[in-house]
Image (cartoon, rainbow, N blue to C red; front, top):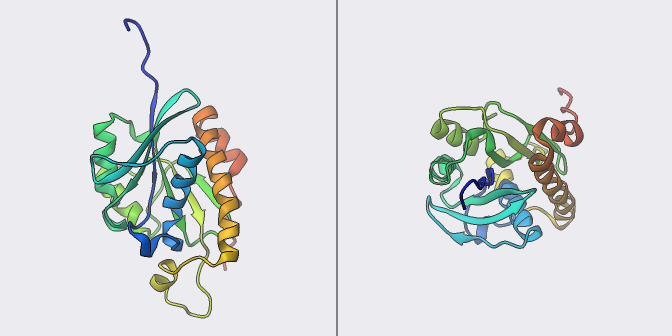
Length: 200
């Protein structure tokens, strides 16, 4: 229709590894978050371009593409860059939801930009987008205890008790995503951010 304004587009990407064996891994908190978001807004993931599963909905009057890259974690950036180009989405409107070992299980922290912090998924996205200036919502999974191997830990399944904590976390993450779309990232950071962990 002449003179109509196209809704602002946002891309929300959860990071994880595809396949049933990884489904309840700590490293798949990003997938869990966008699955919960899609359930809340009654949209379903379908196979799409860019080697990703994609769901589309509207939140706060904005067109939202929710995505789960289907390459493994260290190639997530290829899907994100492809989706951003395909849907014509600006970098500042891309939100990456990712697990973070530096935050305690059940906590989260929103940042406007930043380094990969050792996360292979974020490293891949930074390399493919050629910038660190995209928002990310970091979901805490905590660190292993008693000298447990880090790789084994992140690829291990969450326990029933931990999954109960994660369910609460995912609800808060959904609220944060809606807040970003309604009020912007600064107001959302002020309301939702957990305190930075103290140095050990």
